[in-house]
Length: 390
Image 1 (cartoon, rainbow, N blue to C red):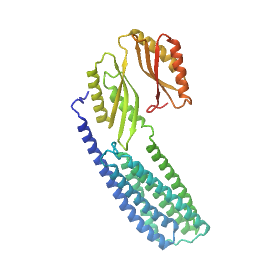
Image 2: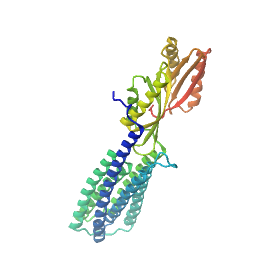
Image 3: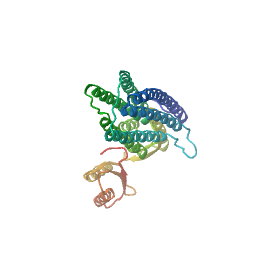
Image 4: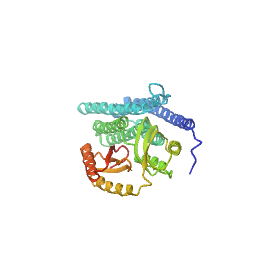
């Protein structure tokens, strides 16, 4: 096993800051590429839209401008999120990235609503477009550029865990569909003199609105504090369980302070024979390893003592576990300890959100255990399912 004793909190923070600086540079560089590409496309499409009297191409140009604005917002959000923690915000400004992603979602939603309104106006009062070969070539080039740009931006966003870039990449992909649809409408008009632009614009607008609402929903969920990814939880648990002294890992709670900025607290079970100095050493090593391997700062590690010298404890634990786990929606029982000297039984019960009356069920369980062991004082805690899934 790798030795983490020599690693200090300062060295881990320096390494984390270095990674964040590299991540910010990637996001800003990608956003600048997006701005340049969108401004270039917007200028040409605007000219084509005016020349051909095409509402679809004109709206496409406006959409490119909004995309450039989205990239600019991403840059500003990344810069602000990178500010150093201060007295008022000791956990930093990382959540600003979620706010910038939300603004981009609103821009996408607004673009969809406005383009839908304009399309409906053209359906009511249609205008005959006038396409040229040059115009169609420009639109076709725009489709290719947007496909490449969308994939590049989204892939980069997934690589550096940036919701803003992911949203911008998805928006660019939608734009390529819009441009391709415009091209199809132009070909249909040239071949059969049937103008589908306005109707096509309305349909595309609805697709954009749907996409904007989905982006907004996901971003708001991040801001509210959604459940941490199951793979991350599993990875942290594995890191902690790699220490032979740790007999169990429970009550994992994570707090999201921005992309790749997770703080957490956990409970660990250790043998009741461990001394305070050994527990202190273990906690320090766990903290260093979890930060180094998973990028999660454990701000608190609480300890459950496990009976290792009392044979009766194992029997009592098994019997109580059967009572507890016989109830639906109970996820787990942990933290069991039998104190024979004081005649106290202690344990925690985790009840899932599927149970409508969690407190009522917990009280019933507590009563059943107390009835089983009337000579003991039963002390139990109701835990919430913060990181597990039912």
